[in-house]
Image (tube, rainbow, N blue to C red; front, side, top):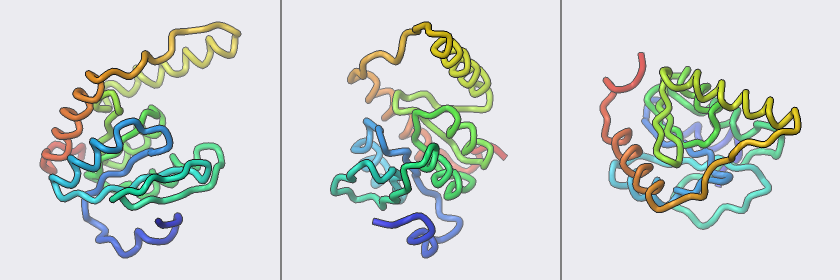
Length: 165
């Protein structure tokens, strides 16, 4: 287990890695299995209110502050890294650093779909602030795991040419 500002310093600066917004990530086992197959190191980022399970991944614990995990993960992200997150804002930040990002439901975030996703998030927040309701995410299904597995596999096996400049 590492704390922010610690263990990553001994890692090769250009080594491609998988970074996971792990607080509520439902696909940790799939990530570990596929990353191991491709020889990619995995780093789980979580706040101190979560207890990490015994894992083969490096774990970075961050304070409970608002967006603390997002900022720590973004600060450790480099070009060609792969980030797994449900957070559209975090996905937008890591895309701007030249990384690739994927949702646990299998959606690969791109600069082409990011504007729409952030706009929908903004509109849903506006509806909630006005006292309204909107349909939230549907219950997770096995098909979500299959979609994620296919998307994550494609990112792990992709070469550098598939990453944004």
